[in-house]
Image 1 (cartoon, rainbow, N blue to C red):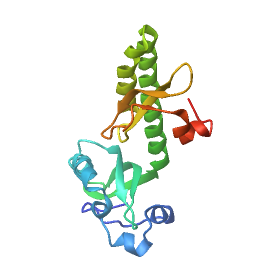
Image 2 (image 1 turned 180 degrees about the horizontal axis):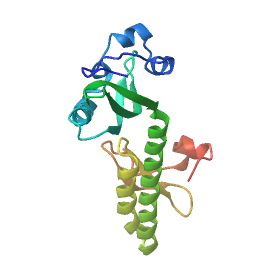
Image 3 (image 1 turned 45 degrees about the horizontal axis):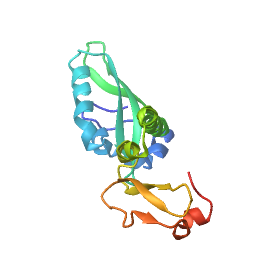
Length: 193
């Protein structure tokens, strides 16, 4: 738990291990000291609501900064213990590490984005009637799928003796619009899509 000014009164071993501080180090810190700067005002707003009596508890997701400087995603449940006269005594907090859950959520969002882009591309490609029409939609989809990368898609001609650039994306443009299959290491290794 913490006092009104945010100093820790008692900390358990699990919290110390989670944050990488010893018990003595934690007791010298306030929750403000270890809260990520971008999350502090939201947390302080909830604390003010408790102190003013407008709420009996709150639950938020926030980030702490560990002893090693890493961000730790947590779910914080906090309530305020008051004496018989209603005077605030101290806060009681339950802190749960949700970093893995947040990483899994981000991965699911990334996968959902990819599936959405590919589904949209599939619909567009189904309506194309010539190879010339498919370059732009592929280029647009690849910009969405690989926003930090540059690349190109090539089409192998019917006689399989050259490849022709079909679509490009990103800042760096490919230097060759046409090249022989033997000039591509992936094709020589049999790695094609």
